[in-house]
Amino acid sequence: MLGLVFAFAGCTLNADDPPARSAQLAVLDQFVGEWEMNAKLTTQEHPDGQQEKLVSSSRWILAGRFLESRGKKDEIISLTTYDADQKCFRRWSFSAKGYASEGTGQWDDAKRRFTWDLKFPESVTATATEQFLPDGTIAFMISFKDPAGKFYRGGVGKITKLQ
Image (cartoon, rainbow, N blue to C red; front, side, top):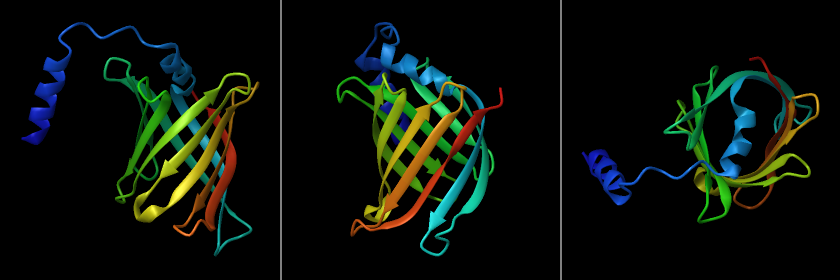
């Protein structure tokens, strides 16, 4: 029922047509499509790393205001948008295993790179980068820290567009 209240409030706050999509949202167009991620993940238990592969797809939803990305292996959903009030990109991720995160990011046009600060339950944080390379792939890095600020998990890899 509460969802209906929020939906009604959202409809009545701005009765006019939504404004045109911003240039910042257009930057996210680069993610639209189907992708394969190949990563080397390191943990305290596996410092030499383990190879992982994940296929995901991304598409625009909600009148082109949110980019929805879905991981196919582990049932992960992420929503990404640009927050003009906060002057940053925002990302929320949820998994079928019950994990959730929220993050803020910045786009560096000269480097063609996103930099993200992410928050997870139990005061776990992460920093991540996604860099668009000339060959059309995305190089990424993520580093997780525990509540004491100590590294405990990370990953590096490449994301290749399938479609």
